[in-house]
Length: 272
Image (cartoon, rainbow, N blue to C red; front, side, top):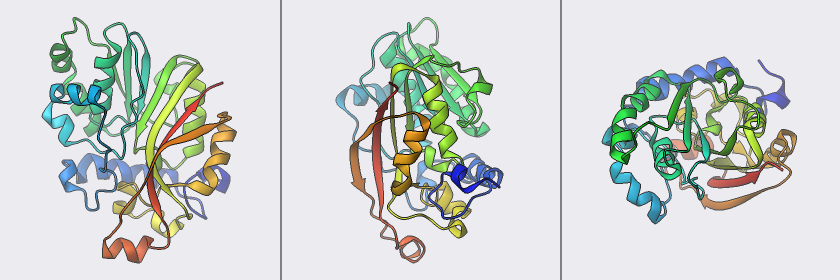
C-alpha cells in the first residue's frame, strides 16, 4: 500500500498498486478482444481527428484499429525528425500515426504493460513500415510500466513530445507518471494527453472494480488534485485544450458513480 499522497488516484484512500495493475492487465489483455466488448464505452469516445490524421487512418491495420481504446485525439502538430513517446500505446494506433507524421528521420516510441496488446502492435511493425513507404521502421515498441520509463532505457531530456490517450487514469501512481514524463522531455518539450477526469474523489471501494477501473472511470483523475500533481511533477503551467462532459446514462453507473461529473479532457503542458 502507498502513502495517500503517492497514490494519486481520485480516491480518498490509497489503492493497492499491484492489484490495480493486475486488474488492468487482465482487462485489456484477456477480457477485451476489441472495442466492441466495452461495457460502457467511456474509454472509446474519441473526438473526430483532424484531416491530417484522417488521411493516415486508412493506412493502419484493421486489427490495430479494432483494439484501440481512447477518449480524445491528443496528437499535436508534429514535424519530421521529432521523437515522440506514447504512454500506454496499446496495439499502436497512435504510435503508427506518429510514425507517419515524423517520417523516417524521426522516432515513435510506444510503451505498454500488457503483453497481448504490445504483441499486436509489434506484429504489424514491418507491414506498417511498408504501407508508409519507409525503408526502415522508425517505431520502437517497449513492454513496461509508464511509472518506470528509466528501466526501459528512456533517458533524461530525450523526447520532444509525450502523448497518451485515456491511459494515465489506469495508473495507481499518477504522480510518478508525471514525474517520469517531465524527466524524459527535452527542455521546451510538450506533453499532450487526453484522459478521464472526475469532479469528486472516487472512493476506494470502487477503485478495484474490474470493469469500472478497466473502462477508465474509477481511476479518473480528480480535478481537485490535478493542479498539485502537475506542479509537484515540475509542470509550472498547463491548459485544457478540450473539455467534454461524459454521458454516463447507464443505470448501474448512475447508482455507483452518479455523485460525480465525469469529463474527457485534453491537457497541454510544456517543460520549461
